[in-house]
Image (cartoon, rainbow, N blue to C red; front, side, top):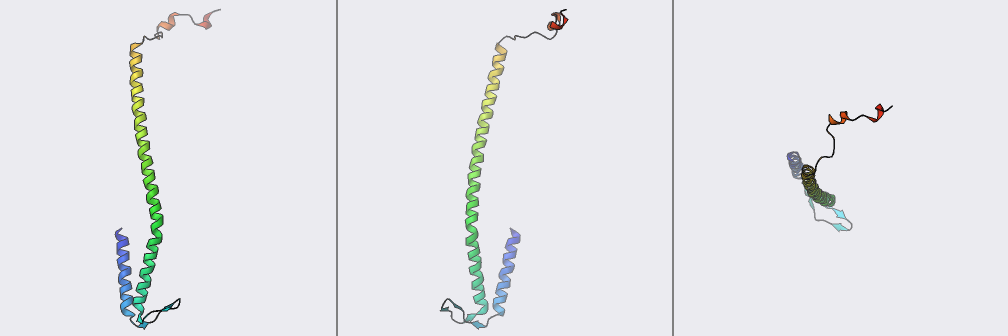
Length: 125
């Protein structure tokens, strides 16, 4: 941002220097309109100022569009973050309920060493 400010300051200094060095009176005609005799530098400064203003106005529309899009995306991120936190809360709650059910219900499986006491199906002749 400092570079842009410095660049704008340099352009302004160059424009003022140009205006001071080109002070010869000039009459401008545009679409039937004729100006008073003004210095060429002043006329160029006015033209430059209108160009800067026009460029600013033209660039405002895409900037506003981008700000709206950014705001919309931020709202969407906040909504998805809330949904993610809610789903994580539900998952944690379901995990706790599952652990509670597993601790209450008896286990219906054989211990690993007890299964070796029974003959396997492959040992039958």
